[in-house]
Image (tube, rainbow over all chains, first blue to last red; front, side, top):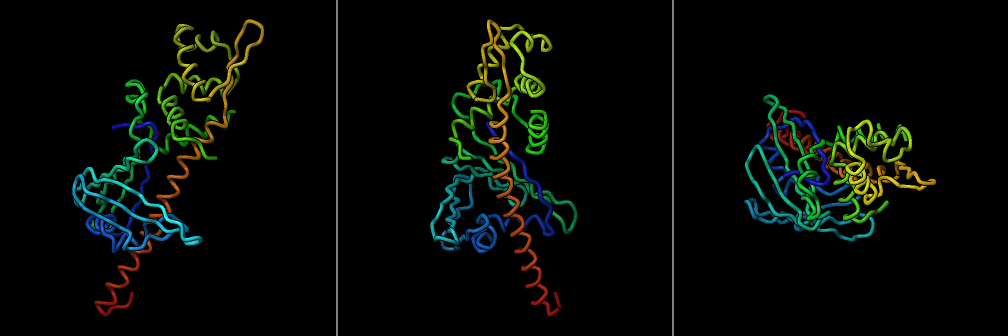
Amino acid sequence: MTGTGELTYRRIHHASRELLFDCMTTPEHLTHFWGPAGTSTPIDGIVIDLRPGGVFRTTMVNDADGSTHTMRAVYVEVRRPERLVWVEPDVEGGMRTTITFVALDDTRTEVITHQTNVPAAYLGPEARAGFSTSLDRFDAYLAHLTAHA
Amino acid sequence: MPVADDELSLVFSALADPTRRAILERLAVQDATVSQLAEPFALTQQAVSKHLKVLERARLISRTRRGTARSCALDADRLDVVAGWIAHHRRMWADRHDRLDRHLAALRAERHDDEGTPP
């Protein structure tokens, strides 16, 4: 599925695919790294039902004022250790996140995160077919445009 | 700058088309009329007008009338908004992976401790 906006983020970690998959899908791991900077994600605020159609919910607590934000997602695909997909129906018209775990060698794994908005109702088939720009290419394109402006 | 999700979707769908991106690149160099825009793309003025309407609805361009000629100009602020959306999400994942890195290092250190070897 292509979307109205998308980005790709790649990162290489010194760990096996299995461990990285477990880090992304286990409350005991997620609590250590999930929340955005300035927030924490208490383990009792993480709900995971690891199967297609199962719930993935995390409540992030703002360190400064204690306010909370809950991410509500549903797993679409659960394939340990190579692929994990969930959707957040409430975000930006429906946000889909796909995480692919690629073994580079015995000790290194590349984690590729791809996020797309599920197309809004008014978006035509032409645009759906045309929009497959990765974040990096899109970034470069925007830089090119704004440099001229 | 906060922008309604619907507005952002308009911008993204406007940018989804290669001809519209080419029109924006052309306008990034200089303002142009519809007929000036139609020429290099081998499109009818009617086809260009359709694309311009989409770009205008997304507020990526503005149109001014000078005499009988309508001139189109790029609205670069709008592109900054898009770049901002992408940068925000990208930063979130970068931060998350920084912390994951530290968590993995801590796990490795623990394992070394269990084995009685120094980390």
